[in-house]
Image (tube, rainbow, N blue to C red):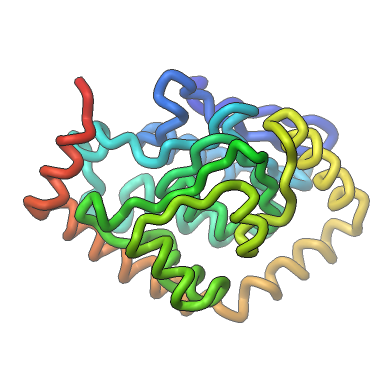
Length: 248
């Protein structure tokens, strides 16, 4: 594996860090594949108790690598990005996100599947699917209205509204607000330690129960969104919008 995502296991806490700072941690196909592999391995690794996902103290993720999306668009539901979605949804170990700076597109929708989300005041969440000629993904069209109500979900998914870290906590998309990225990471590690001190089997059973109530509906939504997303990628509007943002 390359070092686009770094892996650190320390006393039961697995920290996965997006490591592409020159691209603001934009996720490409290689990173989707690697992250999926790392999470699958963590599922079967008895040494892993809690997983922390972060982009470091400066930037969580600018979302999809748009050039990679243009050059190697997902062609079906077995593409790396959709495989990763299934892995995340099936994960039974606690998943914590520590978010600073940009969390764009899948950088935000990924947070909807985390068990705890901590943000810094620098966090900026946005889902610009419609301006790019695309549609919501990763179950966001189901989860956001359920979490926020239709009106607020529409502000995010239809109007491309930006949320600050403070607003993300106020709206219930995140649990804790911290002054900067380093404090956010430190607090996430402290929270992980609290979870690690609990009976692990009971923790995983409880997470499954929290997720099982809407698992089938969520899987169906992700499938429906994914097929429409692939279809939208091939439209003239999406191709033009993506090309306009890609810098060679």
